[in-house]
Length: 115
Ligand SMILES: [Zn+2]
Image (tube, rainbow, N blue to C red; front, side, top):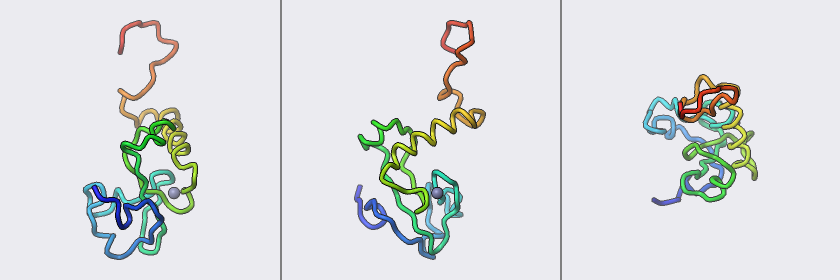
């Protein structure tokens, strides 16, 4: 896998040509948005693609999602830490939207089996 162009981990400006590319498999750009705040990217947006899969710093921070793209407002040197926090907030506050296999058990449950 090459890490050139916008894969190089540096901020990039979204172009018109990017708006019909298959982002995460969807050419309607439903997945082309900030993975933290959710804003949809549009031409002129500044964004950054961030490697997560196979990156030790991401794993050490506790990030479990796949590779992400973030907007300039959400980006920062502590992005892996904030992605991990974002994931944790999502699991706690928006638990009903999370894959049940990734949810913690209710600590008040008296059942001792796995599920
Ligand atoms: Zn954002």
